[in-house]
Image 1 (spheres, rainbow over the protein chains, first blue to last red):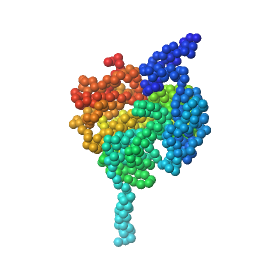
Image 2: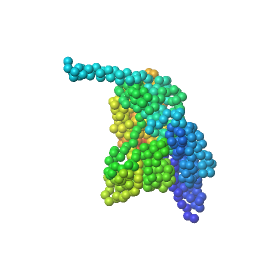
Image 3: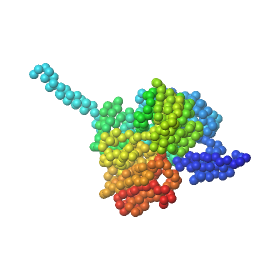
Image 4: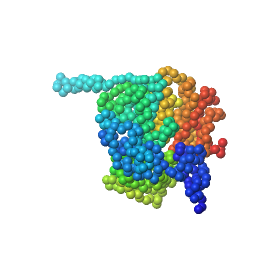
Length: 131
Length: 450
């Protein structure tokens, strides 16, 4: 099998280094273009097991707003993002919600929880959104 | 006296009475510090001013809650510099909302500021109180920015429903739970455009293309990767919408390639069918109140001209955050607003020395602007003076230099400089006390020219 080069843009910080990974037979031969240890680590991970934080929203009943923002508490496997969106869409939580509340446990069997990213008061206890 | 004359005579009396009635309906207050806007800038300025000895602070916020635009920016990527961890917008906001609440800062929600005078009188209205007149010792302007609209671009065509600014769509989806459409073309690849491409896609809409008039994306690299490349959403650079068509609802757009002067190239037209157009075509500092107060404005940033404490040309009126210049990271908004808050507190407590002659800061060459524009205070507690700057075009391997006369005060290497990413240079504050001339010049020089 001939070697191939995989180009990865590091997103560990705003610099955005262009990192190239030399791969042969699925094995990483060399990594170039990073400018800090985080860049090398990121590129390796991004090639082997790309993960993402998933930020989205969940339905809320009785809150000052009808949606609460949520995220995966940890980076989750990139291929599961769309399935996770569908699982979160099936949920409706009751206000009040507190930052850090688990909204979906172990989403798509990834061992990652979906958690609320803000406090959302119930409509009768907090300030109301003007219509 | 005829009846008509009597009526005419009576009229002024009546209007005086009603004027008196109106006058008594105005609530009068006096406070040390009034902060206009309860977004990240206003919150950080209030917190820092409080921590430096100002305890009579009022924040006036027009929305129903604090946090500003962060509440709709549900994506992660905030706080890497300030908190050293990656937070979402609402998480970042909540930290500061809790901080001002703990400090007992007076928060007025659903309150819209109508006017700020050069005498620091602030007029605000709310449904609960009506009109309030506040005499302030100092005012911090922290109104943020707003989005450029279709009108600002003069995109020809029909006027159907379905054309939104990206931020409006973001609020609809993320806070109100409403989808703006099913198939969206996005014009502009700044961060909001990129973030909204992913958001629309993940919420089930199709995103046939993100169009960018420049030859490169205006957003952060990681957003290009995580919002477009992850979902195979095409970024088409040097292309723009030259017509929006549709009867009642958007039915499609005509797209054209543009040349280096952004002029559409004839013969390159093609159509994309869609029901929604999202515009992410720039942000404008929201400075109607600043202009009303008579502060000097900067032609490039669109915000007030400020000194090192973020004080405007009107004494005791300060500005920070996106109202001053549009930031790419909220972390810098926080840092800058804390500078303003600290400076306000020192001024109110008579702890600050004003320089006899200010040091003017100029940008030259490829530097599009530098904030602050002058140093007029000398602050013994300050070790470093950060300069925020932007460049006109992307460049690789450059040095940012700060010089005064023939003396070089700072030289920092940047592997890559882009208009979308603000550059910070920290000056040694001590070096400012002994300059060859009262002028600093900030330049960007390619590595090979040094």
